[in-house]
Length: 341
Image (cartoon, rainbow, N blue to C red):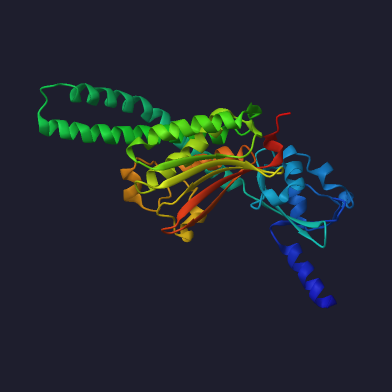
């Protein structure tokens, strides 16, 4: 047994990833050499509280709520300003924890290059698309236009609108990614917002003929950005309307259990094969590309929803079965709730 423990410890010492063992009082018990290189731990830090060594607010928040961040935390290195590390903690033996960290600087830089490229190209495309759309509209408005030309211009106008929608979604996604530190502390009166969303849904539903239901059994409000959350909620509602066969039933709900609150969109549509659910919030991921294009989707809607929710410490839960409908549930933590007196 002693030999096995020695081999395990030797393996941990050889790892390129930092490994740190913490006791139930947040104190450092053991670490490997990689933890010295990546996290700056030294021999003087034994029995030191990890929160006095890694003092970034994001790490302190993560330490106290690790169950809410299963993927861990990416944070700036405390040793080098231009380096980034990914940190993940796991509980063991009660409240003791093992912390694992690895360098993600190269991955971060590549991701930043991608974001900059998308942001720049989206801005550059916006003006020519606006000009092109204006000229096409001018031609299609002429009464004596050749019918063959009109069909061609109508198709051009449809594709230009689609490109405009894509550019607008890319710019919105870029803004959400870059505005992570902006405070989102407005009090949002949810019963009022729910009624507004329901009115908008009824107007959008005219061409689809669904039965829409509004189910509000909570009077708690939200703390956040009313514009961003309204956009995210509206996205989930319009998706349900677009992808449910005509004559379906869609229920929009707002509920709470005292500890969490839930925005819910439920439909009895075609449903989703469970194998697709883990990837639904990825950019440009489509279950049925042809159907998405016919309904005018850009493939970015749920990615935008995901980013809005992340900035509000909320998450999206999806339940669906083929031919049995889908339920999209947004879960907000207690910290984001406001209960009127």
